[in-house]
Length: 382
Image 1 (cartoon, rainbow, N blue to C red):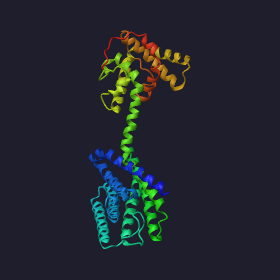
Image 2 (tube, helix red, strand yellow):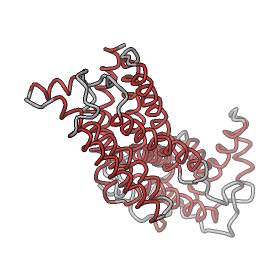
Image 3 (tube, helix red, strand yellow):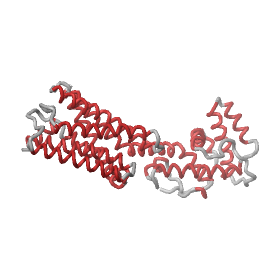
Image 4 (tube, rainbow, N blue to C red):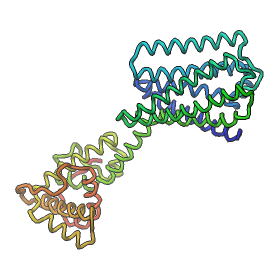
């Protein structure tokens, strides 16, 4: 169990420090994320100084083990206080903020004073409990229990009321990390009372696991941005053949000409992926509306029958029928047929991205039909 706890501790520390470095720029610029970042930073330093390998390495460099433990304890209490400040800041109560700061400074000052007086010092190893339940250790443990307890009581209920998905998951992951911290410090308190070191390997594993949840709470905005980018990449990639052909036929709807291939369109994009996906959806829909002037009254019905004869059913049948009708209008536009009164295609009134992607999936299977059309010469951008 001890080796497992230590191995988990290594990966937990790596995750925490990577999360802190990764989010530092964005978090320090945004007031609503700055408090969380500093809270996780303090907890990470405390957890780092909790690792036996780190303590041994620092001792080998000449650092005093007692000084390392005192520093860890002070930073741990500071972390608990920052948790309370992070929560109090959301209430915008100046009185509560002053109260928390006063209690935090009192706890830190009392720990320093008691350490100078020799209260709570113990000859046991860096991670072992004290030999007696002194006021020093009681202040330390109660500070952590207060910070993490309030975090659980506030963060989880608030996460159920907010509509900000990033905030929801940040608060929930932070609360789950606080639950593990509560278990750790409660177990630590029991170990102090009973003068035993037996639970320490299990408690070490728990506090190391808590680090993953702290890191995850910090990385939620990054994960959300990556998911949003992947969805946008999927939209750009799937929509590209339909978008390219439609803007060739109706070039006035496009802000920029399509590139030679969709690989180039993705790699040499002119805007972030979410913005590019949004632009291509709008341009595709605008071109579709324009091409409805070239749809004949019976075009959709004929395309629907052809799709049925080809074995399409359900949503695929609708998409294939829309694709077939749109293809005929697209061919008429490129062939120079004069426009007539618009004949709206069913189901595309709102320009739903899902509808356009369904049409695009059917459109990619019509390469032979597209090659039969003589296109005007359009010079794609490099």
